[in-house]
Length: 385
Image (cartoon, rainbow, N blue to C red; front, side, top):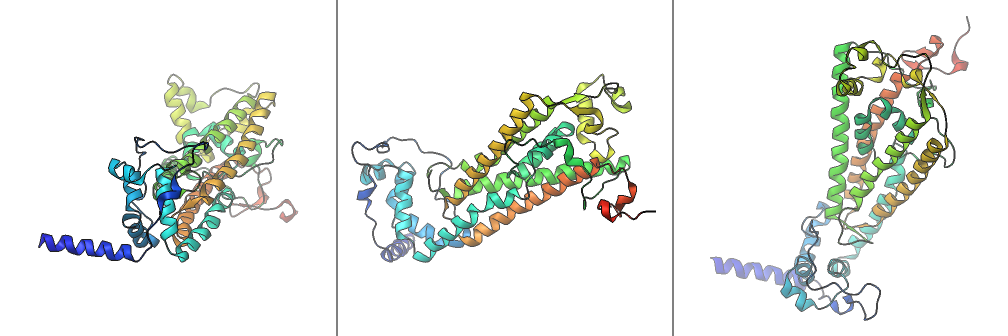
């Protein structure tokens, strides 16, 4: 029975391979004197390995091509010395296998990959419309730095501001028309809501990190085939920009004269610096007795302005880099790409709602008639007595 099983398996592989033309690897080597040269036959294998796991839309055909017609380059990429000797010198083992696959798969799959490149290339710009600005994240980070960190991971695309134009973070809490005004909660409800915020923010961040990791492993970046870390690099690099914006605000604010440094409750726990930080971290903005703007004034200096301008410039570079990474992804079908974009949009939307909830708790409206059912009205819409 085992012999019959092996015979059946070999016949199945042979019939699958017969459906495709044999690939010629002779053009995969780098000519003598070229800039890059060829991969060493003893080159170490880069983990995690690609071509073991696929997105479901074209999984069957991609796996069949990879393990039959292109099996020689697959084994060479995975570090098999016999396969590398048989393959001969090639410029890159990963690209030798990718070129074999792209030359063998059907045209409609190639057309789907082309559509995916356009769709995913638009994703960073689309996500930036849902993402936080550097001013908003800087404002939140003053009061709740850990929460701001989770929001940065859950919404990696940053809303780009104008370069060389100062964006006052303290103005993010101004009562704009249509804003929801969040009033203070009871202590019990405030603790519960704060816990829910962290759960949703952490869930959004984990979703983004998992999706970015799986993209790096299952797909191939057209300009960096062996490396799987580029989508994760794009996600995590947003933290650097938000950190620069936070430092910019911290160097610009000065405590108002004649104002006590701590509120009543914080005074009681002042002997424990860690406990004081924890208290501020878990307290909702709407339940803070003093907002950042109540305690500090902005005094602009060259360091603060330069850091924010740097953050705005890096946000544009970050958007361009994300477009370069996502538009260069291969081995993903249009349907799977649409699903991935929805995952990113879902996390970004959750983080945007959480951010707006915090900003809404900071809003102070001088004229209470501007608030109707928790929504700030336009100044022209307020009826005169």
